[in-house]
Length: 186
Ligand SMILES: Cc1cc2nc3c(=O)[nH]c(=O)nc-3n(C[C@H](O)[C@H](O)[C@H](O)COP(=O)(O)O)c2cc1C
Image 1 (cartoon, rainbow, N blue to C red):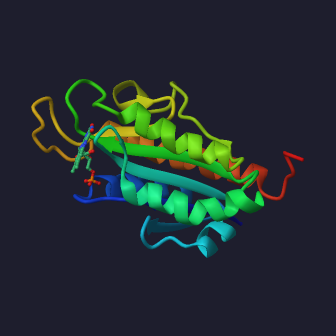
Image 2 (tube, rainbow, N blue to C red; image 1 turned 90 degrees about the horizontal axis):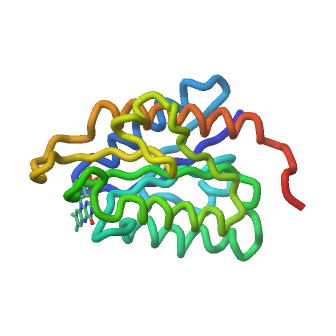
């Protein structure tokens, strides 16, 4: 049984919708259990039990949400100190609604979360460009969906974004199943 921990922050529900969709995708892989928690709920015990951690954040002022960073600084840092997250699988997703095609800071938000997961020694899962949904709502760093139109009118996350999010969950669950119990580093 592979355990996937999904940790996210949300104010208006868009990132929660993505998180639930990533979770649906992961659960569709036989032998996968998913724990879905906000960044304020998730504990060290949750991460200890997890074979994979998927972080999700709204883009806030060009970077990740402070609650996700707090989870990284308060909870994940304990694992960094002891090297106890080394070899777990890691992945990220985000929602945003800034001006422009991608939105200001989406890549920085995704990359800074990935950077933190790499710092923990995790095996990072990207979003390949042939993933379903990627063409309209994908970034190689992970699933990303806009939640507003060109003039910032709120639309909710796009269907394509949800398709890519579901596939991202499938990919991470498959990787966790393959890598569970295997020694990669050391
Ligand atoms: C304080 C704040 C700052 C934001 N800054 C950005 C930003 O820099 N770039 C962007 O693309 N969207 C930005 N947004 C829009 C949110 O990322 C977007 O609406 C997101 O989908 C909200 O997720 P949620 O519904 O899970 O809270 C910001 C929203 C808020 C509330």
